[in-house]
Length: 371
Image 1: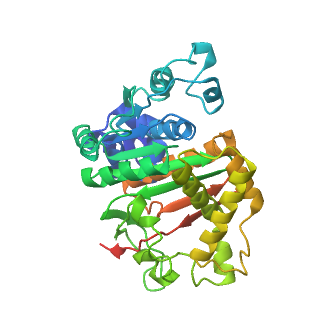
Image 2: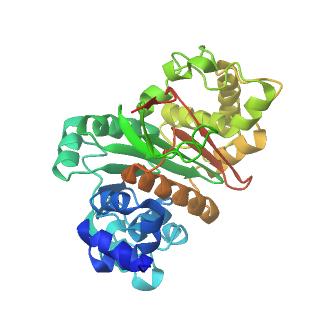
């Protein structure tokens, strides 16, 4: 009988992966397979903004063996940044340095096999034109762009350009105990999966499925929220018409809070800071959104005021447990999207780290088609 590790290494060499890579990534090669690992090692991932959730995300992506990582940020490390993750070290004099410059050594030490590029600016992704963003993404051959903790309006603009450039897009952010991940993998994303066994086929082989993702703007547009949940793929509410139990399983509360927070940000140009009037404004928005989306009133008669108060008071604060949980989930899904092995997020993940709840909602997209 051949040695499993030797066999894996031989396969990887044939797949143009070195013995060092085969040894380093042996465990995940056994899990995902040679082809999936090859896709990851040939990929380029761009991370925008090294605040908060980016730290855990970067760690997991680099350790998994992506080919190239580009990190971009235009701000200097502050004392508050020191508590958000491992990339910035006070003993290394990180405070005052550009975030990408301060993080380079920590990132490269995780896995020297990953090519690392640092940009000390967020231009043109922030402040530039859509055409400029498209040009950069195409020039750098970016497979996935991950925008962290940026205002929703900026995320929508970046996503629009990513779709035109053919790059997959993730948006993610945390607001105190709460956070989200949104995925837009393009209009025709294909992945492989293993179907569930049936009495007629107890050992099914791999199958392919194609998903059509909407943009961030399309997914959360309220133009068609009056449509029932059965028509969610057309932009209808994913909650309208659900039974009491179905609504509880969908856990719409956190999403309503996030939507109210984004409404406040759009109207006022900044995130709330906890003022009494701000809390009341967000609570009113969340209640209106609950009705607009047709959420079952027996399952959720009102949006949790404690959650709204927390979001309004801590929208600009980072909590390490939330960052760790969301960053891990985000990185895992980016790797899944790159490997095209199993279904990625479809398409909005909301997380309550203190409540231990994470729910994926399907916004303006269907079940997908067999390829």
